[in-house]
Every structure is written in C-alpha cells, then in structure tokens.
Amino acid sequence: MASELQKRCPSLTVLTAGRREHHGYDLPLDLESDHDLDRLSEELSTRNKPLRLVINCSGRLHGPHLQPEKRLKQVERRQLMEQFSINSIAPVLLAKAVEPLLRRDQPFHFASLSARVGSIGDNRSGGWYAYRAAKAAQNQLLRCLSIEWARRWPKATVTLLHPGTTDTDLSKPFQTFVPAEQLFSPQRAAEQLVALLLQQTPEQSGSFLAWDGQPIDW
Image (cartoon, rainbow, N blue to C red; front, side, top):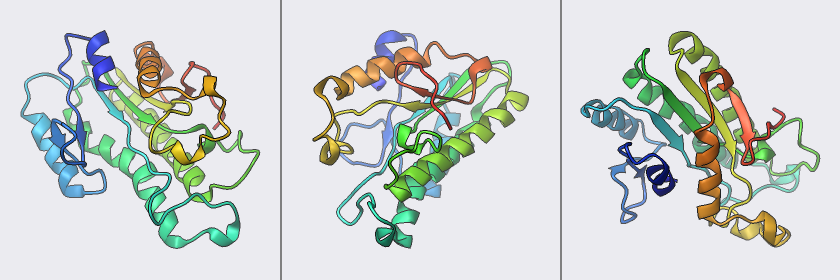
C-alpha cells in the first residue's frame, strides 16, 4: 500500500508503521499498546507537514492458538477478546491518536481495512463468530467516527474497505476454494484500494466499500 500510494502521489511523504522488527517500518507501532499510540501521536506532531491520510491495514483472523469458529461450541472468551482487540478496538484508538493532528481547513482521510464477512446483512453462511463480530464492531465504530468528524472536521473522510481475498498469510489457510481470478496479489489489491481511496470525498465519508467501489451492506 505504501509503495503504491507513493507512486500515485509522489509529493506525499509516506511513512509506514508496524510492530514486526526487521520489516523496514519507519515507525515502531503496536496497535494494542497505548504507549505506542501515544508515541505515534507525539512523533507525528513534530513533523512540519500536515497529516493527509492514515490507512490501517492491521487485522487478525488466525494464529497458533486462534482459529475461526465453525460452531458455537468453539466460541471462547479469549478468542473473542483477541479478535476484538486488533480488528475493532485498534482502528478507533488509532483514529483517536491522530485526531489532535487534524486541521479544520485541511483535507484528511482515515481508511481502515474491514471485510465483507463483517457485514450483518450479507451473512448467509454463519461461522467465524469472533472475526465477523469484530469487523462488524469496527464498522460501527468508524461509522460513528465519520458522523462526529463531519461536524468537527468537515474536510475529513472516513472509509472502510473490503480488499477482496488477497494472497497473504491471513488468507492462506482458506484459499483452497477461492477461484484463481478472485485471489488478488498484494500488489493488485494495493493498486485497487489506493485508486478507490483517491476517489473518495468528505460527502462519501462513512462508506463501507468493496475493492471495486461497490457499497457493502452493513
């Protein structure tokens, strides 16, 4: 996403942030750490350029001790908390961390990766209790944010994005039944999402969109 954004908007200073060491991030950031979020806000406040865009690409679906639930009997408190921590709580606290840097007379865009499976209206197969619920919660939190910012920061835009199934570690265990033409490379996914983001305006703030620009049911 960062390289695609830099290519399309060469005048921007693009910074990356993440918690994995040795990945070449410009800034260290663990979205589950209040200390890191405070440090991010302080670091960005020292820069002379206005903040124009923040894209949250974090997400958690599975791990060594975390798998999407197929049945109610598999739902556990720990898994619910882990999913909500990064998939819903982290994005809104990231927005809170950068809010002091917003300027009423300057455009700003906050975008976050959601997922079609977080749509309540589109849920026809069930399962994946914690992940679905956490993404749905993120959608509600950022929808609330878009309404508040429309009043306080009229040039701000908030967008929720479904990137499509992308060939990353997050989706690898679940790619078996995905048609080849529907499995996007990270590069293609980035190109599609950045192109879509650059088309959004404050009048469209609070939208939940698929990679092709089509709105998704809440």
